[in-house]
Each structure stands twice: as C-alpha cells, then as structure tokens.
Length: 299
Length: 261
Image (cartoon, rainbow over all chains, first blue to last red; front, side, top):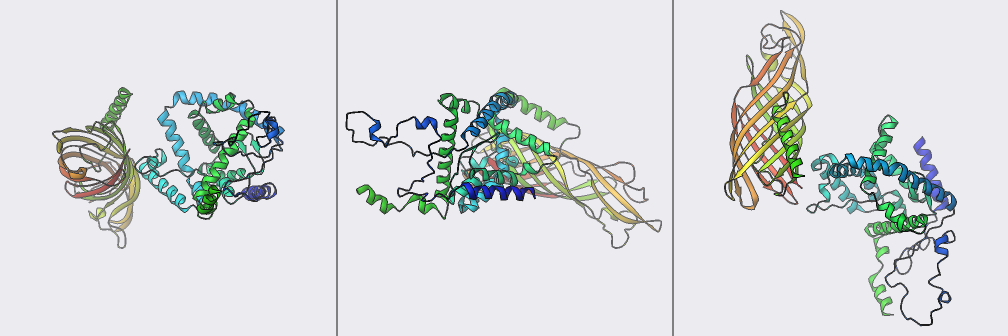
C-alpha cells in the first residue's frame, strides 16, 4: 500500500513537472534541455556568448567561440533557496559525519576488502539495472547484465569479486536506473532538487528511488535497522573509495552549489544520451542520418 | 605485502591441516596451481559424485552429490592454498537391512538432503622441466551437518520407529602427483593418496542385531588410500575445465570450471 502510494505520488509529480522534452532532439542531433537560466546567479553574471555587443574587442575574429566547447546544459531551479539549504546540510553531513566515518573505516578495512564490499552492493543492484535495460529496449545491455550476474555469482564468490569486468570477459556494468529510462523516452529533467542525504536530483531522476528501493534486496532485510545499517555501510564504503573527489569539486568552484548542479546535469545528460545510443527504439534518432550530416557539412 | 600474504597463507594452511574438526575430501585438482605466476586468485565451481565404503561391524556403501564453490590463491606456479564451501547430500543403500527386518513399505536406504560442508587444502609443485613436474597436497573437509533418517523396524515382533543420525563427518587426504603438460596448456595428472575419513553414528534405540545403538559408533574408511587422475583443460576467456576421477574402494568423479583472475 505504502509502495503504491509512493509510486502514484512520484508519477503524478513527474506528469506535472517533467515536461516531455518537446523537440528534445534538435536538428544537429543534440539534446536541448530546459534552459531556464534565471535562477543561476553565477552564470547570469557572465556575458552571453551569443551577444556580440557584450564584447568590445575591435578585432573581427572569424572563428567559433568554443570550437571544442561542450554542449551547454542547464536546468531550471525554482527551489534554489530550499535547495541551497539542503546542499549546505549535505555538505555538513559529508564533512561532519560521512567523511570521518569513511576515514575511520578506511583505516581498518584494506582497499581489497572495500572494493569487494562495493562489488557486492553493485551485484545486488542487478535486478534494477536489468529491468532498466529491458525498459530502455537495450536487450544487449540486459543480456550483459545477466551474464555479469551469473559469472560474478559463480566465479566471483557470490559477487564479492568482479571477474566479468576483467579483460578476458569484459562485460561492462550497465550503470543505469529508472530516471535514465524516463530520459531515454524523452522525459525532461523538470527542475533541480537537492534531497537531504541523497543529494542532487530532479523529479525525473527521483523516480530512481523506486527501483533503488523496490528492486534492491537489502531494502527487504528485517528488522528495519539491519536494512538501514546495510545502507549506511554502502554509503561509508563508497565514500571511503572516493575521499577527495568531492573536496576537489567544491574546492575549485566559486559557487559549489552551482558547480554541483552543473556537474550533475551534465553527467545525467551524457548518461541519458549514452543510454539512448544503446536503445533499439532511440539509437537511430540519437545518431541521426549520416547523409544529412554530410550535406550540412558541405553547406 | 608479500610477507603478510605468506603469513596469512601459513596460518590458513595450519588451521586447515590441524583443526581438530577440520576437513574432508573432494577433487584434488592438478598439482600445479593455475593462478598467474605473479600471484593471484582463481575461483571455481564444481560438482562431484562421491562414493566410498565405510565400516564398523559391517561395510556400508556411501554415495554423495557434492556441489561447491572454491577460492584459491596461488603464486609462482609452485604453491597454492584453497578453501571450498559447498553442500552435500547423502545416501547409504540398504543401511537399515542389517539385523531385524524393516516393516514393509518403509525405506531400507539411509538418505538425507543437502548439508553444508567446507574444505581447505594446500599444494606445492616442483617443475622438473617445461612439461613434467611433481607435486604434493594436503586436503581436508568437514561436514558439520547432522544427516538423519528414520525407518520402522521389527523389534521382537512389534514395530518401532528407529532414527539414525550420522554427524561430524570429516576426512583428511595426503597425496602426491605427477603432472604432464600437453600442447595448448592441457595439464594431465595422476598420483596416489592416503586418507582418513571418520563419522559418528548414533541410533535412537538399541535394537538387537543392528550395528548401531544409542552409544556413539565410529564409521571409518575401509580403504586406506587410492589413486587419482585428471585433466585440466583451458577453455576461453580465462576459464578452465578440470575433470578428475578417484578410486579408493569405490570410484568417484567430478568436474569443476575455474576462472583465473
């Protein structure tokens, strides 16, 4: 009953806020995401690269401003004040709770052990990844995931090791979720949300809570505190293998909140594009007809 | 790091070899480790059909299906330690036929379902040349499960429900082997081994004529040793197939698929 209510609530939210990315694939084959930049103070202060009057340079350069620049992706952020509070909360949680716990854990658990624990948790995520691959019509990915699961269960000591990712077998993990599945079908991000504890997300990507809970075996451990402890161990273990990454990101940023938001949106966009390229239904649209591209190049 | 690994391996070996309730049989594998020369893991899953003859006052045939998963660490192509976890069922045909007759329509065989078991072992190898080498191993297993079955026997004309428990099954094996490496890294091997296998048996009632009673009775292996032979064949993508036969008083055989990290 509780699960059904959650599902209904999340789908209602998605229907309300995640406008289907109308014209999501533009003529050049790139995805055009919602570009509400009004709520980005840091980016609003920068001159618009398309506005020539913003530059007083006398030289008439005849080259592309950013020939190797990445596609500029933004996301609307109407909840920015609340999100900033949640961001600060998560930041404090990281530095005051998670990082000390991860450092202590790192001191007692050697790296091979921590990698094995990470592998095991990743192994348990097979049902969610498999279902997402199926829903994305990425049947090759679903088969690879199943192959990985079988091999790692039998020869990976129940998932503690990852022989399937070795150079001999080379079956890549299909790191995907329900949020990306919705993205593959053209559902837009909606707006930016920072969930306390869980971090950056959007209404669309919050759908991943469904598969990460319903299809994750540790969610069903009883009593509840066992399940919670296992989740906490997963967070601490994961953080112990990535100490310093978050510090680098926020340390180099003028506004860590904006840096996190941009990094998150970029990462998710690239993930969705990668998933679309693997989807039987959408890979043609993502790639675009080659003859048209050639014609455009000639012009 | 190397020193630490050596220490861990030594402790593992000593625990495996001398733990009082440790260890019993299974496949021995090729004398030479299949792990990388620089050192590394190999893991296996295997199945073995094990038959043997145990004795106390009578000889009892025993048949087991064993499935297991193995983790091994080997180095330099000369040594390896390994551990296995698995499950084994048990069947002892005509176990209840001794002494008083079994009431009609009741089972004469002793049989029970899968129980947990563990195995540990170590092996060393001396390569004489590229194609030939000598090896030695020690391997033991322990099955902590209580195998239980019951039947109804005639006791002075009246039927009685008799329950037999077999527990604390363990064995320890020592052996040597010769290994011949054929083209395509196919390793064939054979050798002799000695073994000690023990189990405790206890019956729920003292019934005249039966070789078991309410007092604990020891079952032990009839034959002190035997021989084994097998082949380890490379498959694709780092996998290998190991097939092996063993003969003591009866014939056992098994197969395992290994992955070399």
